Image 1 (cartoon, rainbow, N blue to C red):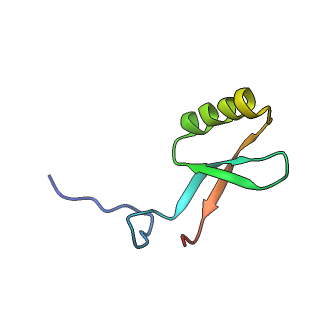
Image 2 (tube, rainbow, N blue to C red):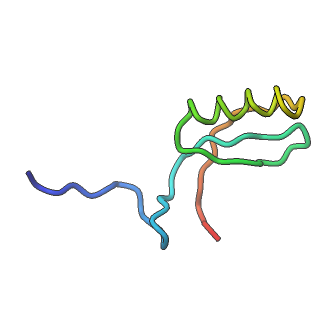
Image 3 (cartoon, rainbow, N blue to C red):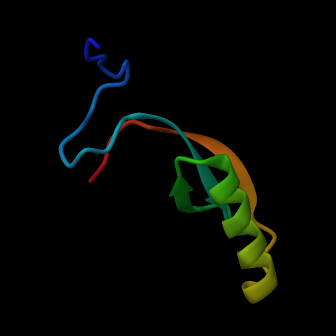
Length: 66
């Protein structure tokens, strides 16, 4: 079977640049980023249960990793 390359460019450390799912805090900052929308939703529910925060799951585009 031939190898296929990802269409997304990779950055050092193995993190791919592309579209991910972030949690936006009530204060307007992105506090966490996930590659899976289900995991982002689970984290949002945990924030609501444990911190009382109503965080929003949003799509984010990763362009640079520090």
